[in-house]
Length: 327
Ligand code: NAP
Ligand code: G4F
Image (tube, rainbow, N blue to C red; front, top):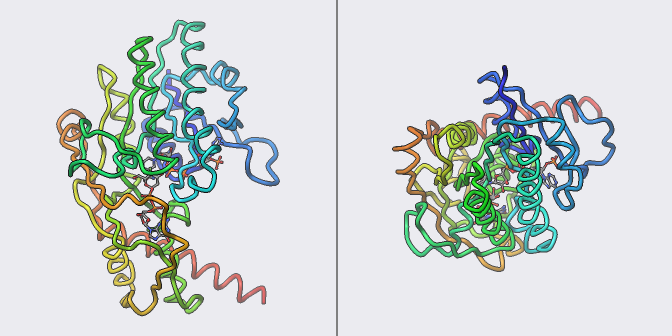
């Protein structure tokens, strides 16, 4: 019998890589998508609509899918945006997790089945870091409505594990990127701009705090860690990252350098991209994942920047051809 996985947020970056990974392991993969897209009609096969801001049909979806494993990736995941829509972010990214855990508890009771639950926790929870690198024992100091909502979800996950004996785990993932990264996140914003500047479709790139440092890895590597977390004998929480940190400035150097351009000629600082409170430094201590999951990231920082630029060059070249053909 095929194992059944349910991925919330299946249309996001991680949902894309995780569904491919699980299919390669012969899972029957189902997904949840929000109803927010205009012009939406019938859901695609094995896909169900649910808005985590209310979640009233979660019991019905669990009963239909009958999952063995749930990967809860759905979230309003943009940190800067969470300052503009804090209540919505708390509803979706925080209380949305509780809605799913509660539906899952009811489903387990009814079906007498044990389900494995993965919560997409975030290194943003470390926020104003009290030590570096950050491990599973580092205290949290969240610095945004998004990070506060993720701390709420982190503790609810542990609370359901401890209160009801549920197999519920947190993966505390540091930043991970890919050509599927949303265009409002800094790496993808940069690689898209690099391609457009190289192809003479854009002159300038406006950014906020380019001294911020992040531990950046490749999303394709990180979804394997999500799966490994749910394959352990006992439920537990894991930090997932590379253990190396780089500034946005260094990402600029790597991305513009990939097409032989000097970033300093094109980048300008625009304070509208500053955040009311910034997370200045994140750097993972992934020793526990290395020891217990035997997990290692494969793609380096330089390779990541290059592969994202190359993907955006291909995409932008196609866009340019299409727009020239239609003008
Ligand atoms: P993403 O690309 O923003 O995907 C998140 C998905 O959540 C979206 O595709 C969206 O699906 C869905 N969603 C948003 N609002 C929703 C709502 N109200 N109801 C139902 N679904 C909703 O994020 P990602 O980079 O793949 O990250 C996956 C998860 O890991 C997120 O929870 C994120 O916070 C967390 N995380 C990410 C990173 C990272 O560096 N990427 C690091 C740590 C943790 P639709 O398109 O269907 O609306
Ligand atoms: O790419 P970012 O928007 O990612 P951020 O805030 O680190 O959050 C991402 O990673 C988290 C894991 O730590 C996830 F939980 C979260 O869901 C999301 O995926 O910004 C990275 C850094 C920040 O310090 C930001 O201030 O880049 C800085 N930055 C500078 N200029 C910018 C910009 N960020 C964005 N998005 N846009 C800019 O123009």
